[in-house]
Image (cartoon, rainbow, N blue to C red; front, side, top):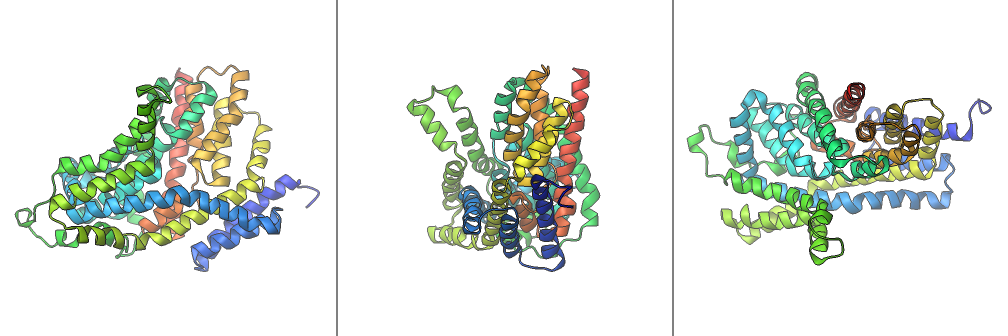
Amino acid sequence: MEALLSPGHWLLVYALISIIALILLIARYRLNPFITLTLVSLGLGLMAGIPAKDVVFVYEAGVGKTLGHIALVVALGTMLGKMMAESGGAEQIARTLIRWFGEKNVHWAMVFVAFLVGLPIFFEVGFVLLIPIAFNVARRTGTSMLLVGLPMVAGLSVVHGLVPPHPAAMIAVGEYQANVGRTIFYALVVGIPTAIIAGPIFAKWIAPRIQLPAVNPLEREFINKEQHEFIHADQQRELPGFGITLATIMLPVVLMLLGGWANQIAAPGTGLNEFLTFVGNSVVALLIATLVSFYTLGLARGFNRDSILKFSHECLAPTAGITLLVGAGGGLNRILVEAGIAKEIVTVSAGMELTPLAMGWLVAALMRIATGSATVAMSTAAGIVAPIAMAANYPHPELLVIATGAGSLILSHVNDGGFWLIKEYFNMTVTQTLKTWTVLETIISLVAFGFVSLLATLL
């Protein structure tokens, strides 16, 4: 057996064994997911040849890098969500969406909102902004959280992976020397039907087949129970206006959009450019929006400072477990990269005779499966495939960007922080998350690549 496999191939075997072990230990033997991720990550590092004295530091570096961003985003987003819940703002948005789309079409409402909100921001940021609305819509309509939540994450995921100005897509635009405007246009042509298929259509099919627990501990943090004690609409207490609530939740989106356009608005190095870049940072934008919500959804709604302080404290406790899991996923990601598994994937894929379009999708897909990061997968794959595509004089670099982005979304599993975010907020088991979120991401990847390939034949 050893004669048949090179050292690089053994790395792929070790990675596969580790992923299978993770799923079995968590899903079958009910071991704590954080403990399991830590054990398997360290074990994989040792098997793959990382020195024993270094393996813990590599794992810690991955955890720290991931938490450095995610912990702040989750904390601030949760506070903003809590203010929306306690003030009734999330309830107001939920009622407005239900009124506009109708109770039978709430899954269409959620994919529509997520697609718009997600255009300028990272998946995780959009998720924590919209999850309070999803909880409220599901409660108001009496439907499964999956019917509401899956279209939401489908919309966010599609724009995160395919549409500039997301960082990975912008990196790919640069690598392939694509036109940004055309890339956005083609990405929307591909992304809208993809989000519809992977979101509302898939959710409508899978939701009745997955039984979620009756009680979701995190849902309690985002729903003001007093709002659900009324029977008739005329008995409800006054809620904040739809406009002010929407403005509060869209504030970080607008700030991040301005940050992304900073170089177009003002010359690099100028005071205005630096200011826009600063306030456009996702953490700063969420911090500003949270502070604004303390007034618009707090003081202006009659809450005193003690109540606001209480809200901002009590909403953080349920997010501790999620944050640890996402960090542990980042630790496993770092082990996989440092062990050389990503490099081995590049070597294997380079030996295949594929069109540039197919190679962009495949390399990104393999990188995504190995590292768990869509951003890393897309940016790395673009750097690998771009010279090959240019040598072949491939005529549609914009389609290469989208195909690479599609590959970077496939098969989200236990080494992806987003996997654990969805699992915990939706209160699912690992198996249920694999059947819903992992399948949804794979549908996005395959359907988007299919549409891109069709476009390539038509252009």
